[in-house]
Image 1 (cartoon, helix red, strand yellow):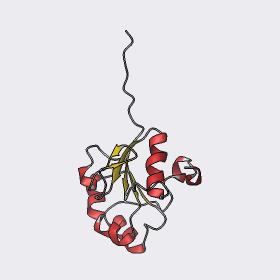
Image 2 (cartoon, rainbow, N blue to C red; image 1 turned 90 degrees about the horizontal axis):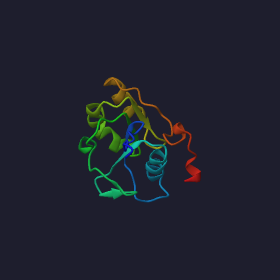
Image 3 (cartoon, helix red, strand yellow; image 1 turned 60 degrees about the horizontal axis):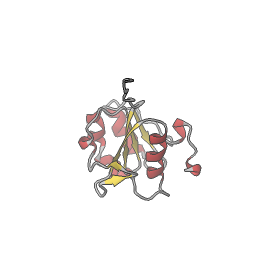
Length: 131
């Protein structure tokens, strides 16, 4: 009998501010990264599931080591999450359009994180308009 191999995800990503609304970019990010083989962990305190994935109320509740955090919350909310982001120690933090602010960027940089101000969906070669 052939041995069944479990495929490991490319990397693990948390989508901060993930939405159940399929027209929102935060939902499109969940679908885009899932389609590319990433381990996707939606984070939203107001949802239990998004796109059939378990949704976590807080970043610290995600049960795996995160490589990437993609932020889809307004800057005022993002500022309250800086320490949570720092604690999980991602290699990459995307501040998607609408999530960035000078203060948010400054706070992350002061804690050793160099955020990328870019659409995380486009970063993996997916056109969000086609999702």
